[in-house]
Length: 337
Ligand SMILES: *Cc1c(COP(=O)(O)O)cnc(C)c1O
Image (cartoon, rainbow, N blue to C red):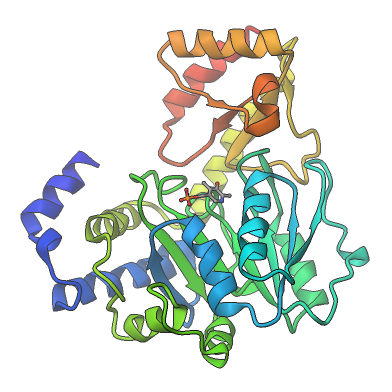
């Protein structure tokens, strides 16, 4: 990362105007790299925003026609539905438990809903919705758009973009970059619906963004440094299936390590709903605070449990930028509990 920063400075890209050829080339390259490395379909649109949180608002404001229906189990999914309800009171949702797989055959999402919203990787409680479940939802509701929060999984696991229409992330999770840049990816159908809705006039109205994106420009002066760093990160990484299999193997080892301890337990016992990029670990309140302190004293970092889970759990990020050596060190430490 320090070298990339130096290169950005020397290449003069930081002072490039966002209507310049240099910027347009950068945008085009990043789009191409999303196709090559993350297997985004060529005909999907890639847009730059400021964060995943901004994308929550853009989706309801600019894409949803009548209402969105949210299926969620944790805090990020809940924040998303709350933002959506604030803009559109017709928004509804189904709250499920962390250990509960989405029961697609019993889902009953009415005519009124044109967008289904799924938090694919729920960072707060360390759960995920596997691609197979997205596929079942797709098959059951082919006429609805599917919006997927992949903030903490894009760049880490292989996503099948054809199973959804709206995908988003921010770069500080699996891309290992400094925060302050979000990406929003749209299928041709999502673009069509946005155009049909015709919402305009806000600084982040999606139609305004899409108009500019067609010529690889942006609607305001963007985070050029972030976009440049994203290009460098994407150039450096292998294709996503290789990253995905490395993270899967490492997650398996990490889970085994926790299972074999005498007093720590997996926060999410159901392997079908357990995340691949963040592992939740639970134990008694006194044990969790003891482990957290000991790990920190040894110069390593753990994520605290989120919200109500804070006192009795911690989270381990299994993001690509974390080295195997770092993970081995953490495991050899945790196995003693
Ligand atoms: C981190 C995170 C967000 C929020 O991302 P910001 O970039 O802070 O807006 C949203 N959803 C999920 C699942 C996250 O992990």
